[in-house]
Length: 313
Image 1 (cartoon, rainbow, N blue to C red):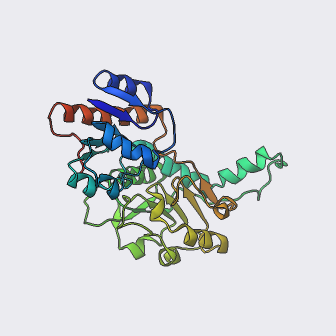
Image 2 (image 1 turned 135 degrees about the vertical axis):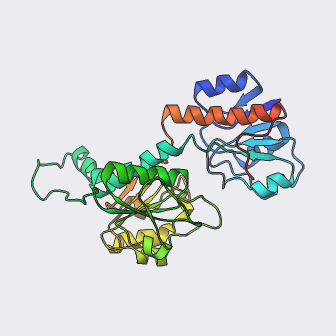
Image 3 (image 1 turned 60 degrees about the horizontal axis):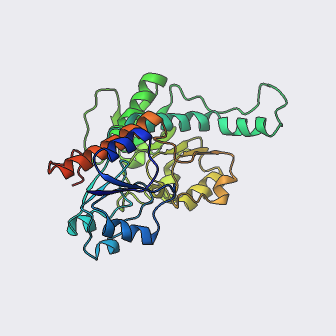
C-alpha cells in the first residue's frame, strides 16, 4: 500500500513505516499545499498527516483513493472528520502519547510568565542587566495559589496533578460533565473557575470551543491573573487577549498555540507580559517518536483489516 508521510518524522518512525509500506516522505516542514492535499487523497492509499494539513470538506467531493488519514497528533480540527467518513476515509489520532509532555509545557508557561523569566532572559541577552537588586523583575509566587483547569481530560488532569502535588496549589476546574478525580479538585461553573489566579486552557479544538475565551471571559478574570493556553490557538480570541494584556485587565499570558499559526500578531510579540513559545507542547524526541509509532500502528491495523487502535468516532 502506498503511504504518504507529510512531514519529516523521527527515524524510528520512518523505519517502522518503510518496513511495512511503500513510503513517500516529504522533506518540507511546511503544511501540504492545496495541490498536495488533492494529490494526497488521489494518489495514495494511506496518509500520515499532521497539524496544518487542512483536509477540508471540499477535498472529499471527488471520491478519494486514500482510505485512512492516520493523524500525527491528538488534535484533529484540521481534518473534516465527518466529510472524510462520508467519503469512506477513516481518521485516527495519537492520544495518550502527548499527555505528559503537554502538561510539562503548561507548567513551563505558568512559571515563566509568573516569574517573568522571558523578560529576564531578554534583558540579559540585550546586555542591559546591571546586577541583582531587591525590586528587579518582581513576579508572582506560584506555590499555594489557585489554578483553574478549563477542560479536564487526560492533559487537564496531568496539569492539575503537577499543580497540586508539585506546588501545593488549590485546583478548581470546569468540565462538560461531572468528574470524580483521584486527587483534590473542585468542579465549578465556568464563570467561577475563571476567577482563579491561574487559568489553564486544556479543551479540545473545534467549533464548540472557538473563541471560548473572548472579551466576556477575560472580563471574568482578576487583574493579577495569568492565562495559559496549551489547547488550540482559536480557543482564544487573540484580539480580545491583546486588548486585555495591553490594558492591564489581566496580568499576563503564556501561549504555546496561536489563532492563525504560525502567524503571531505583532501586537502580541511587542508585549512584555506574555510568554510566547513556538508550539513546543510535544517537542521531546521520545514523545514525537511514540506519537509516530502510534500512528504507524493505526496504519498497520488498517492494512491488516483490524480495528484501528485510535479511530476517531
